[in-house]
Amino acid sequence: MTVLIVDDAAFVRTVLRNMVQEMGHTVVGEAVDGEDSIRRAKELQPDIITMDIVMPKMDGIEATKQILVECPAAYIVMCSAMGQKKMVIQAILSGAKDFVVKPFKRDRLEQAFRKFG
Image (tube, rainbow, N blue to C red; front, side):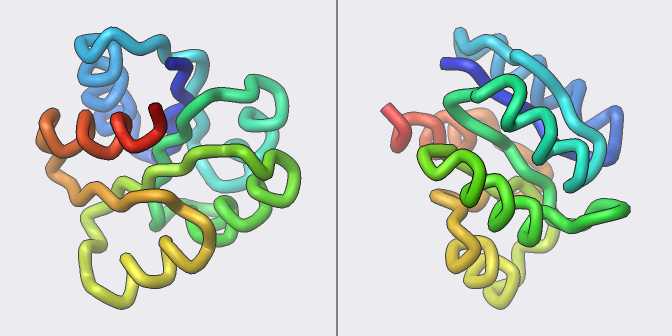
């Protein structure tokens, strides 16, 4: 599977990239904010998008909504430390298919990805 990683923190993008590659998937790109994620999703057409919630310029929930307008088949997994019930509900209502809480556990990320296939 091809994956686009969206997070404003370079360290988090690196951690996710390493996990995704260890799982046998291909990281086709990275985005640093919500606006960037929309452009990259349209350009790269990844199978899965990991999306942070709290980012500059545009948050992950709004970006998810806009990506799904442009790419309705996008499979978006929210990845955020904001694990409160309200944020999880907002993420799912915006179209995300799953929610993984930071710090990431590889088995939980794999579980979210398996739902795609």
